[in-house]
Image (cartoon, rainbow, N blue to C red):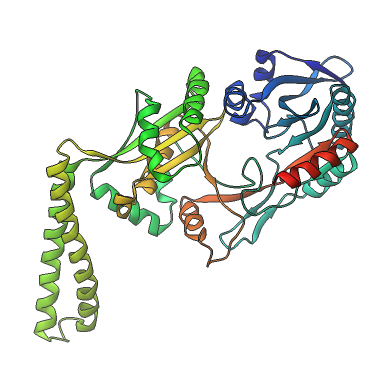
Length: 418
């Protein structure tokens, strides 16, 4: 086993065909890390005895203290982790090389799926190789940072992913019934989702900053500048067509009003032979609710049309593409229009957009590992699962200890700082 420096092109050609490849293992992400967090970066290759490249790694690194450094390989090294002999060879080679260069440790968080779970957190499918991988890591001086439930790690450990199809009807038909209703209602309210061909990141940030995001404008600018080179970043907006919204709202109100009037006549007739009066009463109660809802929509739509005759933006999303899939990094709806289920509609339209481009999966974003129905995060989880998606639990973060003495000092300093 020999570690060599490889070029960006060599790394890209190897990475893009690897099963663990993600957009985190790209020059674009490395560049964002350099601008925002001050990392330097380097591409390492792992050659076998015949000089064949059998693994690679994007290494971000920075100095911590006293000239000592640490490295981070986002979403892990691109190697076969199930080959325990290879893991040992790569690890030993890294330790020998990086100890000479005053590295304390290397952090990795490979996208190895530990389990797939249902909405209650119960395991649907367990990766039988996980325990073997964990044992190999432990044997080779990797410290597992735990099976965290929240956002204690750099990158999410819990993700929700769904398969895509090039036919939008197939995608929609696999959704949960309640999600279908939300999307249909959003469509009836004349909400359109379109890609922003201008990719104006300043306009995007000015809109989404209302949601109190933790990331700065500088971060989004760096993200855009880095990923736009390969056309891997997209911005989408949800618009309310105020003219069509007003027309649709009035139509729905009139239809419900006619239905309500018919039900009232049935109830007043008292004819239990011809009609099911109890059912009519129950339907009338539900219709009264809908009538009030549609009346409010008529009032709101009239106001929208008066104030925004050319339409208004009510949601925005940002995506980054991998080789076979796409990731929704931001999906934000303006709280003033939350009742129109904008984020759900945007997710569906984005799935249709990339499905037509023959992408195979979509990452709907991270969740927590707290599956308690009383948790404040549970509604978000249920909504994401409505897209015929799966909860994927990754194996977690590991620190490969290069210098044991300095690592103890680092942990003490970090604990004090934290």
